[in-house]
Amino acid sequence: MPIYMKKSILDDLLSGLSDKNMRFSDLRKLVLNFGFVERTKGGHHVFSKTGIVEIINMQPGNDGKAKAYQVKQVRGLVIKHKLHREE
Image (cartoon, rainbow, N blue to C red; front, side, top):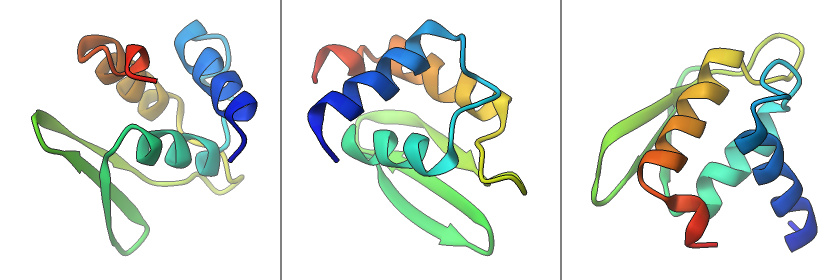
């Protein structure tokens, strides 16, 4: 994924203005770029990262978009653990 695209997705995530319109695939790529490891079980994608206690459990919506509460969950972890400053 090009860096400019990743920054745009990160900017959208941090702004909180696109929670209902973020594509699941974009959010998934962003989480993976932050170093999370993914495992899937059925339609659920569970992400974990060494040094972070919380896990991220996401499931794509029928329209291919991420669910707004999951976008908020990811934003909270990114801000709490200052992951956006590692980029």
